[in-house]
Length: 220
Image (cartoon, rainbow, N blue to C red; front, top):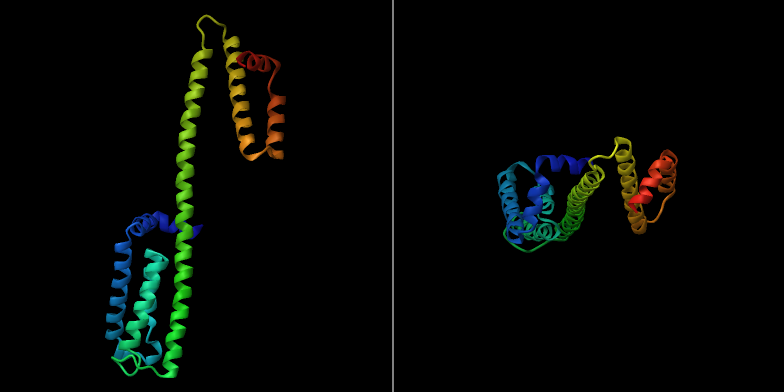
């Protein structure tokens, strides 16, 4: 996911994850974004027509949904709709509403809700993906450390003083192959044997010599 890589590279994903674990800050950000949208709309009010009443609020809603998630985004939608209705829809500073303005307000709420669902869903998917990657990397590191420890123990047991190098090599290869078979069968029980796994095992069996088979039997 290119979007996830860009955000992850900038550290934004980790900041969003931390913020979403603090609901007070997430909802506070939504409120702050709407307040800034109101101030921006007041600042440009004389330069824009009434047809763009809710334009600045969309920025606040997207920010709230992007950073805080679905519910902070919906809080921003509600606050934006109410404040835009009261402050900017004619007559100003009143909740009286004409039919065209009511339709515009309803359309804004619908479109803003869809935007919140899409943005929060996209970011939520990225967060889940990143969390799974972190878990898998940690699990891989843990299993790799265990595997290296086992290999080290096998090697230390195989290097017996006084034995010829060929005998040490035969014993070590046999024990490593036994370890490989054990790992293979353990994985097979979890996910089932695939055609690729069977072909790989067959190639290993063809490459392994008779002396290695004997060494593996000795280890067993």
